[in-house]
Length: 173
Length: 104
Image: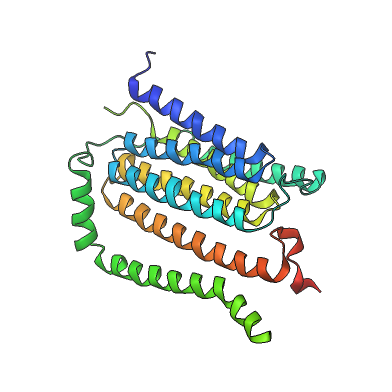
């Protein structure tokens, strides 16, 4: 069986994604963990390109590897972390968790490993962004508008949550 | 046509989801727990995009769903970190096993 270019790209991207995830589990310094996850996010963006979702790939890089990673780094820098993430949960608890998650993984794997849906011709790769725009502003217009309310609520909520304490302290002093 | 089968994408998403779940349940630093949850959401996004191309009824809706999921994930990260900052100002800790005020 000869490997097509798409298969090679898939294998490499998924390897990078999984290695990033495993580094997240195994590294000891919190900053390194977040940086390791950037690899995962970027390679997931590559997978989106393979699945003819170019617009989503751009969004993934902007939002995940750009915004979320940076905000998490801010969160780490602004809080005092005991640099290395020393003694985590007990070994017994880790083993139990690992067994439980492995069981979950195997159960789901049994359901999906031979899932065979006949591939159909799609036009997702032609003018992908245009198609998304058309669908977003016709079929999905109400959730799209609700998203703006959600973002506004999150913006105000985040500001108020992060700010409240200072004002209370000033009141006390 | 497409040489990568649907199940390959689903298995990759499953592996990423399990890694995220394990990280969210074992790590002590709350920021790492939050970012593990982002990894789980990302795995779900891969599923949505894979089904939008290779599923029984391929259409653009899967990608639209993914856009909404990414939005909600970003909102969740922002609000989660704001709560974390507020908690840090009060308790001076970000370790999840020390956030047990409700138990006392």
